[in-house]
Amino acid sequence: MNLFITGANRGLGLALTKEAAKRRHTVFAAVRNPEQRVEELRQLQSDFPNQVFLLPLNIADEASCDAASKRLREENVSLDVIINNAGILDERSKKIEELDMDKVEQTFHINLFGPMRVIKHFLPLLAKGPNASIINISSEAGSFQNAYGGDYPYALSKSALNMFSQQLKKYLAIDQVSVYAIHPGWIKTDMGGERAPGTPEESARGFLDIVEKKMEIQATSCFINFKGEPMPL
Ligand SMILES: NC(=O)c1ccc[n+]([C@@H]2O[C@H](COP(=O)([O-])OP(=O)(O)OC[C@H]3O[C@@H](n4cnc5c(N)ncnc54)[C@H](OP(=O)(O)O)[C@@H]3O)[C@@H](O)[C@H]2O)c1
Image 1 (tube, protein in one colour):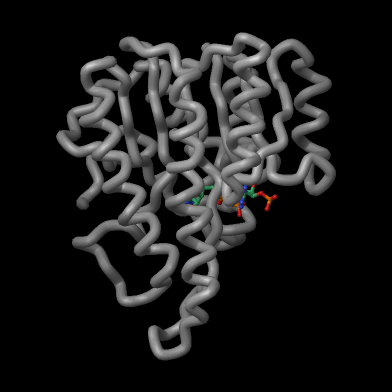
Image 2: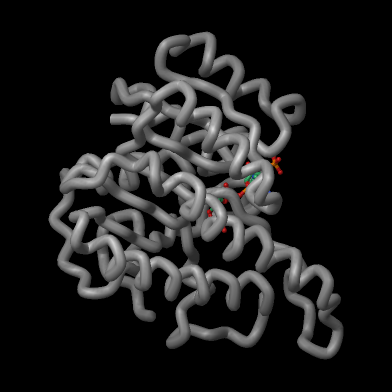
């Protein structure tokens, strides 16, 4: 399969790229800055030269999304899976009275409008049919039922991402495209920190099983975890 993954240079995005390459898939690994923190991805590219391809892409910038999608179109690339992984967690633990609204806006630009821009520009490259998937990496923080009264920009942007995913699921049902908003678990990355119980590698294996349709998914909404279990909306 051909996978397109954003934020592929570190954390979960890098683990997804590694797992997909190990399983013999081809990955278009999108990175915001192809000069910064890309050493591990470059190594992976040299280990799998015919399977891992770097693509510069800043999901906060529509012109960058347009340019990256044009580049793939010019090379006649057709995608089976789009994974919107890139995201930020800003204004951590700030009270509502203390929030910097510019940072709130920036979070929405990346965590919600980023995946929307990506789908706008890359959906035409997706080969529709029962093997096609769109995965938006969400978070339990976006669960309405589990609202914990903090991480406002992050939680609200992930809630909205869940709604965007559900909208896409309906829109693309006729094309048989699977659409999920998936919580990867609390995992050890720059975002998750050292205390996180899970690893990005374990979550990545779950994600690949989901896109390879190795899991029976019972959920009625698109919001699930990396084990394929339903998440509370
Ligand atoms: N870690 C957890 O415990 C956890 C839990 C729930 C959900 N998640 C979700 O899982 C996903 C991956 O998180 P992570 O833990 O791997 O985070 P991370 O280690 O902080 O990595 C974030 C990735 O997003 C990229 N990125 C940020 N802004 C971007 C932009 N404007 N354009 C393109 N790429 C951009 C970063 O690129 P740069 O290197 O250029 O900054 C980096 O590759 C996120 O959506 C996150 O919300 C994580």
